[in-house]
Image 1 (tube, each protein chain N blue to C red):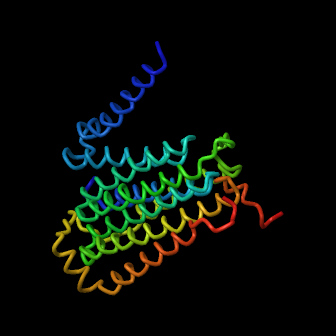
Image 2: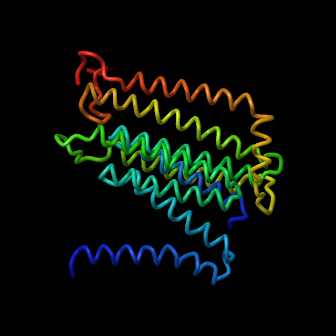
Image 3: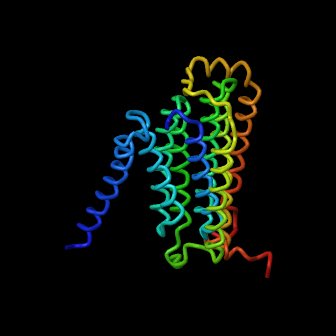
Length: 103
Length: 198
């Protein structure tokens, strides 16, 4: 099982689906960001799995995964500071109360 | 029986089931001993804590479950043969991003509005969409011939360093500039403005 690419990819797909559900369903903006992190991790798992099972990608997979992690860190920094800036203006972390543009 | 004792018993039953299932599968001969059992247990922890992240009511506990999820994923990276990625996962995700998210949770908690409703109104539709997505991905994975090796390849760290600093030097430098821009942008966005609303 740990020697088959399919197991890793199915696991990654499951984690991605969980992240999608959280992003679509949660009300809290920070919960949505955590779901995005889950999705990024799922994609990273798929990249690492491809890297260790496909012949031409042996070390490139790990390099790409590390670059994705750095980009995810940048994304988390900017996303969380945007959430904090909005919270300072609206005093709520719930995304369905950010309705200034549809009133 | 007191409720806390029941909770502890329930946790033990869950752990027993999580460990017993792969051991049972190995006894039946469906999976092999050794790495497969470890992979199975880590996958269970990963999916279980991921589900806790998106369903729990208390957002602090969601953050802690997310740390468990990242740790299990680091274990899976080790099994997949990418130890440096696992180390980076522990350092970056558990060490940096989780702490950042926990701090943001603490900064945005309001006592006035304890969020009774955790989910949006479209939660059922989102659940259906996620299940369909998972099924489609699983079917696609099963139907595709990846021409994968029968044995996973272990990534040597010195080889990785050679590739990173020879073939991928330009992406590496671009990422450093991106991180600098993200730090400056984060400080600018979260800065409290003079005379603005506190």
